[in-house]
Length: 418
Image (tube, rainbow, N blue to C red; front, side, top):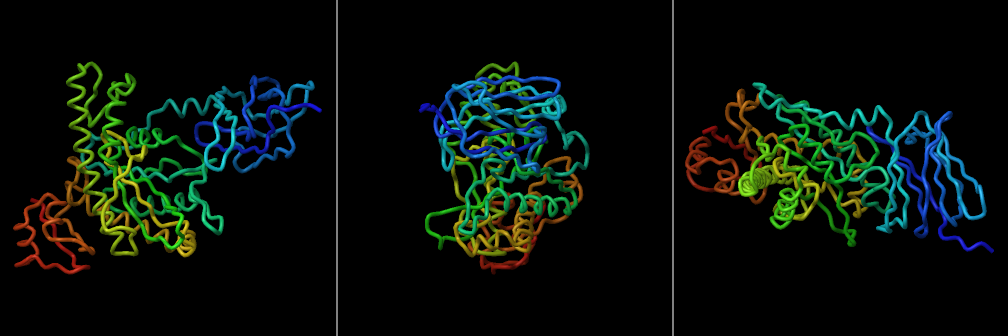
């Protein structure tokens, strides 16, 4: 009996705006060869000493440029898998080690000419030199494609519900005068973590918001949370950026590092990161305050963690855990449109509070705002609100005719502009 090196146990395909990704699940590592054929266009994968027991089925809704899949055995030592294609494709392939629910995987990325043109284009949705421009919010739906994220008891997948919330958030942001939302993904496909914040940088975003649904071993745990990057995480990415010659030519805080000596580049990057961290902390506080007014929060303070997706050096970034998908009640809420819209409105309110208090120069908000407004949340103090909005305590008291320091949850405060 033939001793096979690996068995193909599954097959998945996902398409994004740039490429089609095909994944073959394997129970162990194997060697393979990959090549293309024309007339008609095909991709051929030869896996050595491998077998297949489960038929490979193509999901037409996510198939991208792949029109069919078949397999056979050209000789006793080879399993051949063939993808039929709509068009010629350039290939990139790699093996992945087991992680989470997955065993070994062979990943094949297929790039068409149209996809390569899309990937080479740098989309600039915000012209920072244009007067009265919109504030741009990059909205990131976590996970996607072959990465489902956390999965609830009723099999609700994190990747699906956070995409729906992200779309609702974009609608809410776009409805605000002077604000515009940009989605990092608008479909069921995976984007590597660094590419997510790089999309925000290319869009010249003023803020990056990553949307997730938390999970925990105890199903009773509930509530939303807001996170910013920990100082340790920022320091490690700071070192990586300085060491990366490709990043050295990027714009950081509007200043290119290319041509600067190491010391000057380090100072510029450090200044940019310090300003970014300060802004991230402020906007996270405003979002958390809005979430407190509209539902249960897991903690009363902003969390700090070493999330890769928050490591942009020059775009303030926050991560919102909208609810615990591991909690059956919250899992159900996550699937409800009313909850998704309420979550989007709360995040938008926090974002609006932040930008009306600290509008970027040259934006519509900076030119048209009068006095910003802030609704008091649980745990707020008058001094804390003044500090968050960079105004003096006395001017805040004066604008709201407050004599002492007592404020009540739900009260709307006027934040003076100077």
